[in-house]
Structure formats: C-alpha cells, structure tokens
Amino acid sequence: MGQYHQLTCPELNACVTPHAVGSGAKAWEQINTVMIHAAFGLLCAAGFGQHPRSLPWLNKGQWAGRHIAMIGDYCEPTDLLNHPTIGGAHPDEPALYTCTRTGKPSTRRKAHMTCVAHALVPAIERITSTRAVGYVARPTPRDILHFVGPITKQEDTWDFDGAGYTPKERTSQQEYLDRISPNRDYARAPIPLAKAPDSVPGITEAGTGEAALWVSIDAGEFVDPAAFGAPDLAAILDSTDASYFVLSTLFHPESRGGGDLPPCGALGVVGRWRGDRLVLLGPGGLRTDGRVLTQEEVRAQFRDVTPLAQAWTTHMDSLRAHEEPTPGPLGTSPLTAAQRARLGQIVRGLQQAKVITEQKQIQVITRPAATCTHGETAYAIPPSISLYCDDGLIWLPRTEREAMVRDLATGRPLTLAPCGDDRNNDRLALTGGDSHITTIPIGSAHQLMAAMAA
Image (cartoon, rainbow, N blue to C red; front, top):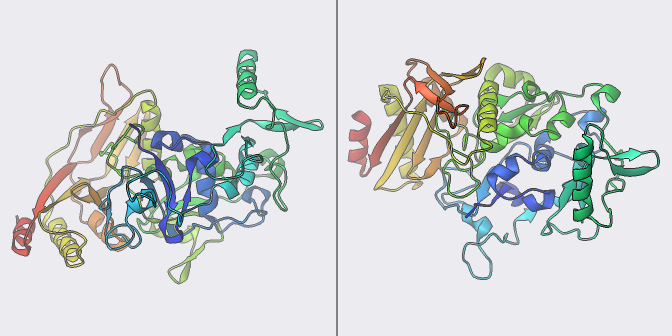
C-alpha cells in the first residue's frame, strides 16, 4: 500500500493537505505537482519587496524560519530524534495521524492540526494560470480539488488556452476538461482576492523580479533556484524543479510504502533538511536568532548545495519510469578518530537527555566530497554525514553538523555515474571512493566508550 504524507509546520500545528491543492498524497505525487511547490514556497517566502513578480499583494511567509517536515501515515514516534519540536519528549509525529475517536493510527487529521492550503488557492490560481474545479461550490479542505489549465483571458472571456498544443493534444485536453467539469466552472476569472491582479505578469511584461535562495538555517546550506531557470519568486512558485530538492529533503529517509522516494544513500538527500528551519529568502532578509539573515551572509557563510540539488533532480528524472533505484556499492573507509570522539560526545548527550536508550544501535553514514556525472555534465557534491538510531534520524543543530562535516576524512573523492545496467542505464550509482556505513551498538556507558575508542 502507499504511504500518504502531509507537509507540516509542527510549531504552528499547521499542515498542507495535498488534496486541497490538487495533488495526490504520496511522496512521488507531491514532488511532481506544481501546486504543492507553489503552496510550499508561499508559506516560506520572506524578504521580498514591491516588484510585481514578488507578489506584493499577498500575505506570505507564515512558515518562514520555522521547522518543517513531511510526515507520513507510516511514521513512528522515533523517526526524528533530538528535535526541538518533533519527537522525543515533544509531540510525536504520529499525533498528526491519530484518530481522535479510536486512538488508532489514521489518515484523519487531529482537530488541532489546521490545514492552511485552502486559503492559498486564490493565489495559486494566479501563479500557475490554473483553476480549482469545485472550489467555489465546496470550500472545505477535505474536498479533493482538481486544478486545470492553462486558463487565460481571451477577448472578454476566460477559457482553456491551447496555444503550444498540437491539434490532437488540444482535443485530448478539452475532452478531459469536459469530463472533469461538464458545467465548465473552470472558464472563469480567478477566485477573488483583495488587491490581487487576475494574473502574475510575465518577465517580458514586468521584467525579472527579485532573486531568492532556498535556505536551511539549521543545516547551514542553501540552493539557488536560478540554476533551475527560476530567477525570481514568481518563477520559483510556478516550477517543480526550483524546489524539487528542498521538498525531497523533508521526507523520512526510509522508504516504507508505495510512492515513497528512493533513498539513494550515496547522495544523502532524503531526510537531509527534515525538521530544519527553512526560508525562501528574498533580498530583504529574515529576522531570526535576534538578527537579520541576509542573502549576502548566506552566500558567504553557508554551503552551496545547488550542485547536489541538480544531481538529485537529474537522478530523479531518470527514475520516473521505474519503481526502485539501483544503489551503488559502498567503500570501506572507517570513521576517523576525530569523528569518533565527536560522535561519542553527541551520543552521550542524547543518552543523558533520554532521547536514545540502551540496547540501541547508532548508524553513521559518511559521504566525502563527490563528483556526480550524468552524460557530459559533472556536479560537485559537498561532503555530508547522517546519524541514525535504529530507523530514526538523529537531528543535529547546525554547529554539530558543521563540525562533523569538518571532521570527515578527505579520502579519495567519490564518483557517481550511470551504473551501466542495460535496463536502467541512466541511473546514478556510486562507482568508487570512500563512502562508508559504520554501525555502533549502544549499551552501557562503558560499552559506549569502548565502541568510541575502537
């Protein structure tokens, strides 16, 4: 069976119900639905001015700088350990999916988890030139909305715009529209929204708007959407590629059900920013931690993981027709002494805080710097490290993550390339280097120290 996910901001007890913005609930469905990307970007956008393509008429950024995660209905209480708002002594992930009547797991949302998606639909219609069929008649977040388009104004009426379609494609699309909406309730102006224009002006009309960066404040990393052909906010929101990587990082790294993302551990993407404070950062910056975080500071002090995002997007494009990836082999490089010492400090702290208990196992995946090739293109992948306790991801603050990455042995750089399988010849696989999985049993404090010293 498939696993269904919701984009959540636990601090605000808020979520985006995928059906409310025209998406299926599986991971693959959501990361390939532009309306989910638009909703996500609108909620995280901060620091934008009055340019028409920065959507100055819209109140946005309610989730900017807050902890965000994709939470599935196969989740476990220990999926995200040591996190300030999810897991541990804080509200468990399954609380989102616990039926208030029976107390058993359910995809029914608890009353305190508010879906904010429906309020974004008027803006999404304008950004994506689509119409939400059924919105006016049944304005509740539990209803399944279908977004159809493109819908543009033609003389004095609004209707399907078939420009750029072949005659056969236009006929097929019109037949679909007639089936899904026999009364043609898509042929209308966008849902009324105070001070908003009927559509977002294009770059040729209004010029390029303000550039933005996707930023994980806790990971100290950023992605530049301009590398994906999205030079301003409006372009980012009307694209899946510009935030494809960011959404992918929010899912739990273990694939548990149909439609889950392939882990592809060599790249270390799924789960990478899970539970982190995120922002789609405009030139005006974001006030956080008692100061204003600016694009200039991010570019100067944070790691640019845009090449990793490009490699991931290319990798996923090659997997769209397949169910499972072909993981590459792993090398045999052990943890360095510095890594073991730092890991020992982290684990002892987690034990003292009762985040993890005895008789557990800590799994450490180290990934030195890598080069990922696809055809004639090569992407420089930065080093990274992931910590797990059994199946749970151990969340670390930025200072600890950066220290662990600094401690990574340089080793021989990895090379990621097509794995050469005739059936899956465009899948990326690890072909050489020093990536390594280390599993350490955690028992008493004495056993822990012995494991760290080994």
